[in-house]
Length: 106
Image (cartoon, rainbow, N blue to C red):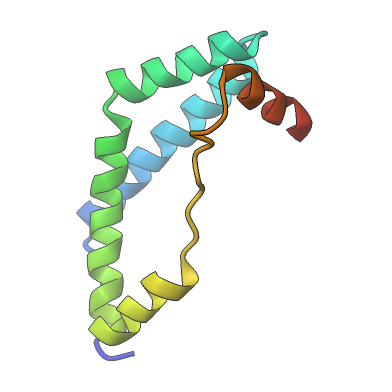
């Protein structure tokens, strides 16, 4: 680890504010609707109305910058390439097949 990197308190507040909003609201949506379709639509509405992807991208940018400074470019790139996993959306599935995948999780 090369540098002693600290995240500003204001940046920590931004990150935690965004995470609190997302986690609490997603939990409320998940437990507040009876059927899956309404739940999915409410989640989409929340993400769009509240610009959640922009907020998460801002938090990600702060954390990536801080970690990159802490690890150094080579270690950071190695971590990004080898230690991060990404969920793959089921683009080849239709609505009913995706619903069945959700049912199988319960």
